[in-house]
Amino acid sequence: MANRFTLYGHQLSGPTYKVALMLVLSGEPFTYHHVDLRAGAHKQPDYLAKNRFGQVPCLHDGTHHYCQSASILQYLAETLKKFDGKNAEEHARIREWMFWDFDRLAPGVFRSRAYKAGLRKGEPPVVESFKADGDAGLAVLEQHLSKSEWLVGGKSTIADIDCYGVVHYAPVSFDLAKYPKVADWKKRFEALPGFGTPEQIVPGEQKAA
Ligand SMILES: N[C@@H](CCC(=O)N[C@@H](CS)C(=O)NCC(=O)O)C(=O)O
Image (cartoon, rainbow, N blue to C red; front, side, top):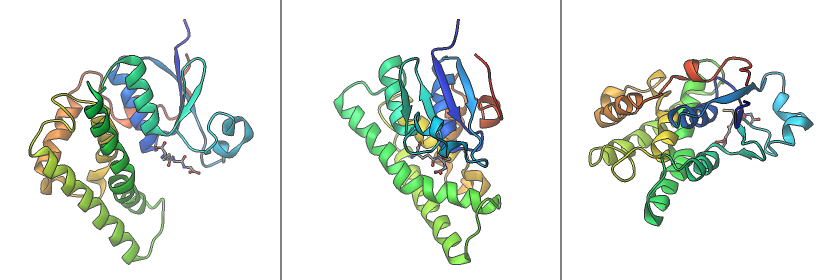
């Protein structure tokens, strides 16, 4: 039988990794379509019909296409009833982390990784400014995780999946020894059943149904 979910993405994409993580941690097999960003496949009409923003990831659930990784995580949490908050307050707290992540944590960590890998070029003050943003974001996480094991409530939720999908790439440019609580949380997250690295769970190319 064909898989219910099809993920369109790229192996080097952090937001694609977040959605793949949610699927594997939820025990949901998925079909995978590699979107060749270098060739501009994400700006072609057939892909724009799936994701109007022309970005990866995009998830098809058998009837509709969904985009924006944080929104996809919420959709999956609601429909699969996994990694979700248990009441309105927890849902709000989860959203707070996810909105904060893309605003304050991801730019510093992802950009610093791209500079380090030579995928982007930047003047030293710009590079340093993204590095400082990443450190500031990690310090916020460190502070919160010194009080609790998971970001919201007493168990792992999509808030953890969302932020982990960024922190996974932090060691490329940041010294996590400076953030021991974040390092412990990262290890706890990596011990969740089904966990995999991007290389393990996001294929480089196609993955059939
Ligand atoms: N906010 C979006 C960001 C997605 C995003 O930035 N995707 C990148 C790859 S990591 C992309 O598709 N870049 C190509 C482009 O924006 O043209 C999400 O979380 O899904």
